[in-house]
Image (cartoon, rainbow, N blue to C red; front, side, top):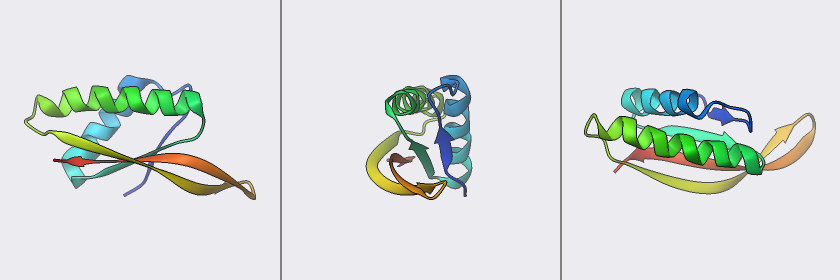
Length: 86
Protein backbone atom coordinates (compact mmCIF):
# COMPACT_ATOMS: atom_id res chain seq x y z
CA UNK A 1 0.00 0.00 0.00
CA UNK A 2 1.38 3.39 -1.00
CA UNK A 3 1.41 6.54 1.10
CA UNK A 4 -1.09 9.20 0.03
CA UNK A 5 1.02 12.33 -0.50
CA UNK A 6 -0.69 15.68 -0.08
CA UNK A 7 0.58 19.04 -1.32
CA UNK A 8 -0.62 22.53 -0.55
CA UNK A 9 -2.54 22.60 -3.83
CA UNK A 10 -4.21 19.18 -3.47
CA UNK A 11 -8.00 19.15 -3.80
CA UNK A 12 -9.36 18.12 -0.41
CA UNK A 13 -12.33 16.25 -1.88
CA UNK A 14 -10.05 14.17 -4.12
CA UNK A 15 -7.71 13.33 -1.24
CA UNK A 16 -10.69 12.53 1.01
CA UNK A 17 -12.04 10.12 -1.60
CA UNK A 18 -8.64 8.44 -1.85
CA UNK A 19 -8.41 8.10 1.93
CA UNK A 20 -11.93 6.66 2.17
CA UNK A 21 -11.26 4.20 -0.65
CA UNK A 22 -8.00 2.97 0.84
CA UNK A 23 -9.52 2.59 4.32
CA UNK A 24 -12.46 0.63 2.88
CA UNK A 25 -10.13 -1.68 0.96
CA UNK A 26 -7.10 -2.04 3.27
CA UNK A 27 -8.49 -0.99 6.69
CA UNK A 28 -5.58 1.47 6.99
CA UNK A 29 -4.28 4.56 5.17
CA UNK A 30 -1.11 6.61 5.57
CA UNK A 31 -1.18 10.26 4.52
CA UNK A 32 2.00 12.32 4.28
CA UNK A 33 2.36 16.11 4.06
CA UNK A 34 5.29 18.52 4.16
CA UNK A 35 4.68 22.17 4.98
CA UNK A 36 1.90 24.12 6.63
CA UNK A 37 -0.44 24.39 3.64
CA UNK A 38 -0.05 20.69 2.79
CA UNK A 39 -0.76 19.70 6.40
CA UNK A 40 -3.83 21.97 6.35
CA UNK A 41 -5.13 20.27 3.19
CA UNK A 42 -4.44 16.82 4.67
CA UNK A 43 -6.34 17.57 7.89
CA UNK A 44 -9.33 18.93 5.95
CA UNK A 45 -9.29 15.82 3.73
CA UNK A 46 -9.25 13.53 6.78
CA UNK A 47 -12.28 15.37 8.18
CA UNK A 48 -14.12 14.94 4.85
CA UNK A 49 -13.12 11.26 4.66
CA UNK A 50 -14.48 10.78 8.16
CA UNK A 51 -17.88 11.92 6.93
CA UNK A 52 -17.71 9.69 3.83
CA UNK A 53 -16.82 6.64 5.93
CA UNK A 54 -19.28 7.42 8.70
CA UNK A 55 -22.08 7.06 6.14
CA UNK A 56 -20.86 3.46 5.67
CA UNK A 57 -20.77 2.83 9.43
CA UNK A 58 -16.97 3.10 9.66
CA UNK A 59 -15.62 5.32 12.44
CA UNK A 60 -11.96 6.28 11.99
CA UNK A 61 -9.17 7.52 14.21
CA UNK A 62 -6.13 9.50 13.11
CA UNK A 63 -2.67 9.20 14.64
CA UNK A 64 -0.21 11.94 13.59
CA UNK A 65 3.57 11.58 13.80
CA UNK A 66 6.73 13.24 12.48
CA UNK A 67 8.79 11.28 9.93
CA UNK A 68 11.99 12.10 8.08
CA UNK A 69 11.82 11.73 4.29
CA UNK A 70 14.58 12.08 1.73
CA UNK A 71 13.82 14.36 -1.21
CA UNK A 72 16.55 15.13 -3.76
CA UNK A 73 19.37 14.20 -1.35
CA UNK A 74 17.89 16.36 1.43
CA UNK A 75 16.22 15.11 4.59
CA UNK A 76 12.90 16.85 5.26
CA UNK A 77 10.51 16.46 8.16
CA UNK A 78 6.99 15.45 7.17
CA UNK A 79 3.85 14.80 9.13
CA UNK A 80 2.40 11.33 8.62
CA UNK A 81 -1.22 10.67 9.54
CA UNK A 82 -2.16 7.04 10.12
CA UNK A 83 -5.90 6.57 9.61
CA UNK A 84 -7.66 3.37 10.65
CA UNK A 85 -11.08 2.20 11.86
CA UNK A 86 -11.70 2.51 15.57
